[in-house]
Amino acid sequence: IFDHSRYKLKVWGNKAPLDVLAFTGQEYLSQPFCYTIEFTSPEKAIAPAQMLMQDASFTLTSPPMNPGQRGMPVVPPAPLRTVYGVISGFKLLSTSRDESHYAVTLVPRLALLANSHQSAIYQNMSVPEIVEKILRERHDFRGQDFLFTLACPYPKREQVMQYGEDDLRFVQRLLAEVGIWYKVTADERLNIDVVEFYDDQRYYQFNVYLPARAPSGMHGGEADAVWGMETTHQVVEGKILTRDYDYRAALPRYGMDMEADVTRGDPTTYGEAYHYINNYRVLGNRYAIEPEVESGVFYARLHHERYLNQQTRLRGLTTSATLVPGQELKVRGEAPEVFRKGAIITRITSSARRDSSFEMAFTAIPYSETVCFRPELIPKPVMAGTLPARVTSAVVNDQYGDIDKDGLYRVSFDFDRASWPQGRESLWV
Image (cartoon, rainbow, N blue to C red; front, side, top):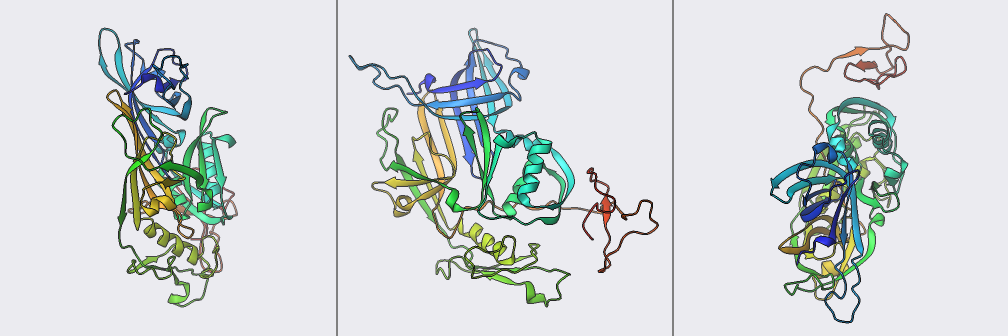
């Protein structure tokens, strides 16, 4: 039975009563979450300005204990989880004599980066540094709004270009290139959403256990459980070959080749995936446990991990409101072995409405010591036609542009709005 009191929507600055009718929420690893929440209010004409761009929270609580049991005190519902974010969409669905029916879209502040479309140059910065610069300088994120917890340092890149991309896509593209994944969490002390960035399976959330048990039909008062577990297996690429080119290194064509097989000969994989140009300058040691970041072997392993993420896909249903992406779920009881060993939650879809209780569908991958979740690569933008730029020099009004020993110049791109030191507007091109 749907219990209105179990779900609370609070919009900062709003004084109208909001009675939740239904909701659907989708959460992912390496994507912003999105909750669509329907509610009624005696306020029949809530203005869009009262909702749009307002901070908000959506709280899921446990059902009250001992309801209707004679002689037993009713234990009020306790908060299970609160989702913090900002209202990005608002609808008036219907109006009656007594109330109006509305819907809002709740997203993390990170999702608003999709509304910022930019073209820019970044020089001598690592991927985490570029991401932090965009979050802080363009979107006023502060230190408590995001957290980098990385297993290894990332090298500075000579130049990175953002061309006609929105900030969210650009940030996600850079993170995916180096295998950094993120999740959006909540800071209950500050009542804010927090973006947490990670790059290794050691940063999953462990010790999450649920029993395997089929629902009895009305599971509102039952203990949380998992059922409907499915496993899907498919043949994926068996090994990776990468090749790059560095004009500064006098090497033969095959001198920058690197091969990787994370599974070390898994007979259920097949084929070779060849990836050309990842912009690495060193090959790295293919036998190293922790390869040099952004080396040839580093990129080859990342490519293979992405393919292996598709090798086994897990799905299931649960009544647990606290299950979130980034957790390792271990199912106890009569469950497929892969669920008992550990499943990394990558996506959840939760919902409840007047005629149905809370239920969640989840997608996962098996836990592995050698294969970590990696976000899918995002294609770089295509530049069609001519890209205007001016040859520059370190000397103001110089008659000639600077040229290096390889015959390369520095240029100032017309689209770039940043202020650079004279003659340092780009890398050598």
